[in-house]
Length: 79
Length: 145
Image (tube, rainbow over all chains, first blue to last red; front, side, top):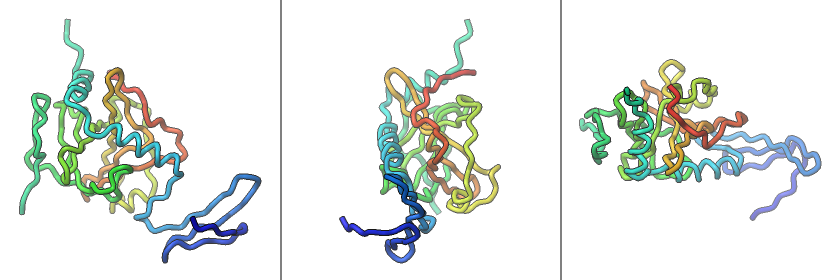
């Protein structure tokens, strides 16, 4: 891992068009500003990983599971 | 010009297959599935409550999705300008919001944090992460209507 030391107000460039700026450092909290092209997704790592896990869990449900959901959506039978 | 159709029948659950489903291009891949960029929405329920968001590249990959309104009437995700730009659209009325469903044995949940937004005109789609909203990734889903 490349390790760089930066002060508040200083930046790091990744490639030609991604700029990460340290806005503020207070205790163990660092605020970052990130400029990136539209097709680059920027997310907090834990949020992205949770979403990745949720997507994988949701992917390609079994026929039985699909049937169960379909049944749940069916209008209640008239008695 | 060829039309694409869902290549896998979904057994007796399949009620109706539109033979000319538009191919939806993902503006960005879904987290966890970087190689899948094109999908179709296959309707699974004749009330339009359930769809299969199915990969063109691999029809074995599909997600159950649903319009949130009937299940989560208060759910109104705010769509940011970046999303409109990624979808190449400006008209919020042409956007379709779908939540991804996880079908479990005991309960079915919907991902309210990261819905799929589809633009009906450009046929572009994106899974949006609603940062800063504290929306649940697994909201229990019931037919409450």
